[in-house]
Image 1 (cartoon, rainbow, N blue to C red):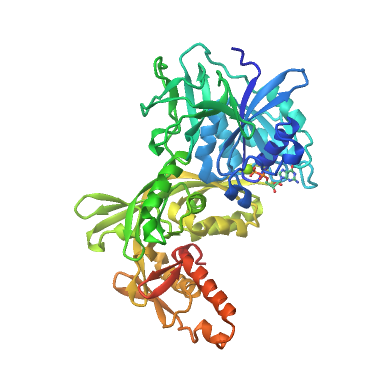
Image 2 (image 1 turned 90 degrees about the vertical axis):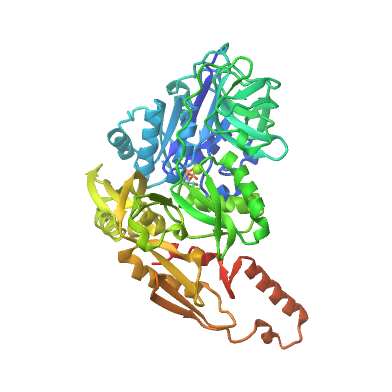
Length: 598
Ligand code: GDP
Ligand code: MG
């Protein structure tokens, strides 16, 4: 089979540089979607993506482009997320491609994730097409950005295309550049099937649907196929491509990207990164697969209604098909009952998963404050890995504790260097070095505890640099720190779900801040609720929620029954997100208050 008319590429960039908008223009220009049907950010198909205006999942679509040479080319285009939490999604997508369109915002230039995504693409040996976007804006400085691409990324910029995702200018040139600069796929059409699973999702009716890239051979409906790593076999129920709606095809041939309906109904039977082959005639070697994404942030997820515990387990299993980086294990809390300790790649990932569980599986959940994975060295010579403050052993048993550190990188205009250095110090970090990338930007490197970064580092970085700084990081190592557990007592009762681990030097400020914050968040009850912060038996801060004076209904003076009912309904709605802890009604926000302490 001839693959010379196929081009597989990912669109990569720092967040907000315009990947999804450019994808929209490509769908439009290739008449994949007619103008009247085009919604913006077409490939961001999840509600959360649309609402937040961010891409969370990579999305592969097929478009057919009639090039200036008169030939039709099949493009398999993968729009990818830009946020650092989802880097693993990007690397998964790149493994399916020969090329990458690297989008750089002409008003912002090279930013932290531009660098990391460009590195991923270079390490995967992809043909890179730089696209300088937003040239319609008056503040665009494309020539300078070209220089940054050459100097900072070591990518020849003479091939870069100037585009505007907004006006469509230059998109035609971009498509031509893709035809000429991205290599067509190669592979053996007659060899046994070898297809890499890039992604998959659970469909209640059809079972698991897998997105694949065929490296050798072909897939036809009716074929008996096998998952190489997991070993299960299945009859292929159908294959197709997304345009962007699912469009069945007769065959997925060598070099193509498309979906396979596996018919498998058990969530655990399909694994991203696994290779699909023929059952009768398996290929000799599987695709290299993926590094497992390691969770960095952990939180307890508890159903508000304890009857939903099994549903939550079921939902986690199904969501895992689509999000293989999720990990979980059962967790019990005195305050919140039965739930799971769930591992995430970062805070945004945590928010997204919680929201998807609630929306896609109709669950009402409480999330507790995020924690990292601590290594606790005990006096008896053992080492415990804990991800929940509740699991911290008694201080008398602890020799020392190690916490995860990151190597972080910030790219920022020189004017803000001082502000960033101060912020790093405030968060127990240490600036290592800095490099001038150009007159406009400095790249700063520093080491910082992950626990500090997940609190409010990013928001503060943005506000202290007027939005100019961009951040990227990776795990570095474990280091010893003087850590203690801060407990919170409500009405004299310790609430396990509100505890967290903090550096001793920050414990007092944190305890004070938290007591103040909780006082704002916890609604008035019919009685006074003292809030206390404690380390061990020592109370180190306190505040009080005063008692509510009157019953709300007292305001209605009997008469208006419908108004009374409305008030009661309103109260009930408010309660939905509340959890009774002892006699105190506590809203969800309280459990994440630690993220909001200034
Ligand atoms: P992504 O995060 O890389 O997918 O970026 P999006 O495609 O979501 O775009 C981020 C923001 O930039 C959105 O508000 C877009 O409307 C805007 N945007 C994208 N491309 C252009 C462009 O060429 N010109 C202008 N003026 N705005 C653009
Ligand atoms: Mg996007």
